[in-house]
Image (cartoon, rainbow, N blue to C red):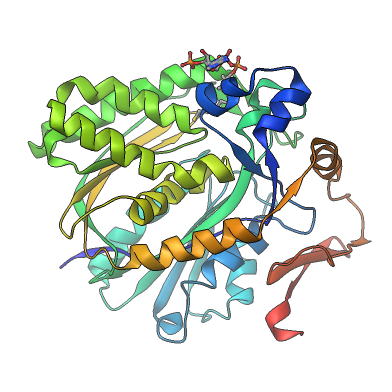
Length: 389
Ligand code: COA
């Protein structure tokens, strides 16, 4: 029985920063950002959006009357949650009108959370093929104004349903993972911005990729020649390129050309959205599906990395290539409707954080279906505008 990604949806706010303008404001050569980092634009998150609202907007694209009652579990991967105790999945369950006979939990291991969700969901659906699992990767990536990490910020959400007889990607059984207690990136509870040892994290990322990729190959007997594409966690797109380059010499010239072309397809959207933390790998998968010439049965490799650190390499085969067209149209429409902010507007938006007291927010400028309207009695207030307008 095949189990895998049945549906996939994406949401990010519709305001962004042009990174050429950010480079100019920071006194950097724009090519450092565009080529050296591999990012050209970055989503800017308004105060009226958080991981719950973004996840709800992404998940509303994959939850329909056809599958709502089949969802047995929500696994919400995030490292920018809104509560130290209550799971973001619980708010999501209410906003999406999911059944009460459901497990709804939040998981955290930096950018790895959604992959834990996918693998756990795969095992669950194999044992319960009539059920489905909703997996979320939603985050806001914040490093701070005028920091080296500033150019690698962003945010957004990816939602996936994992089901038997999937429509998009049938997951292979084999998977290789590795964990090690490493201080390359962390965010203490009292901070809203992450701390990172940037160069160290890049080196660990590549080390982990090589370790789990080669372990996967050893276990399965597959080689790099078995992959039509390798996709990566992309905190910034140059990071994935470094991972790919580290194994390219194992491929023939023809395979190298194909893997490089498909890597370019897999970073088209990430370049323009920025870092989604745990959703980044899955945005890259969407970018690949929408922009590469792939055929049914093609095997795709997925490398997930969460600083701290957990790495996993797994794979799947493409079930059909038709969802790609719908995905491309959706992304084209999204990028077309976005509004560019000046650097000054971005800085002011970045500084505007939710206070730790009751507040009523002005949501007029936010065009999302799900918005955060404020805090009342220390509880975040969410609205689904499709029910109120
Ligand atoms: N044209 C083209 N490339 C240029 C350039 C120019 N004018 N100027 C610099 N570059 C290149 C550098 O050579 C370097 O390339 P390399 O990484 O291939 O060596 C790259 O741009 C970055 O330059 P660097 O001086 O290292 O940038 P930095 O000190 O500002 O920091 C990061 C870059 C990535 C370390 C920093 O943004 C960061 O810490 N980001 C967060 C890291 C992260 O997400 N870690 C988690 C991993 S999962």
